[in-house]
Length: 166
Ligand SMILES: [Zn+2]
Ligand SMILES: [Zn+2]
Image (tube, rainbow, N blue to C red; front, side):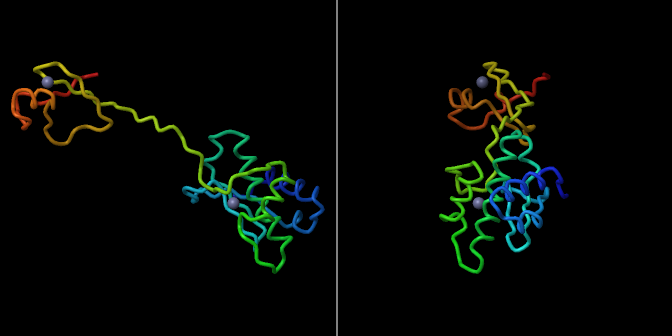
């Protein structure tokens, strides 16, 4: 999906660098099919794709990713037919001009704290120990501590974990 607002912002930043032709052609789109990358640049098509997931990380992250990808278009545009490294000096220079000096050469999404919800609780009928799991236990499980203490470490039904009702 084309984003008019981001396209306009990218065009303004590009025009400010005197690259009118690129400014009038470029467009910024959201691509929900991007998985691990925050964004992608398609210099041949003057197109930037952003992963909708970055919106969760706030306006700053969207802006930074947009400028990172725009720097790729600018570096490529200026290089013409000359070969350049994707994150080489030309790209770094464009980053500095766009206001993100020292930008990292990465495209991956920022890491989210993985908050695993442990919804299922079990307890040992012998010692009362409580075990929490994100998923329901599919096979019979026994209290490890009690099995070690009283059954030589082998599974013993006496210490079978019982699902607690939370
Ligand atoms: Zn990059
Ligand atoms: Zn136990």
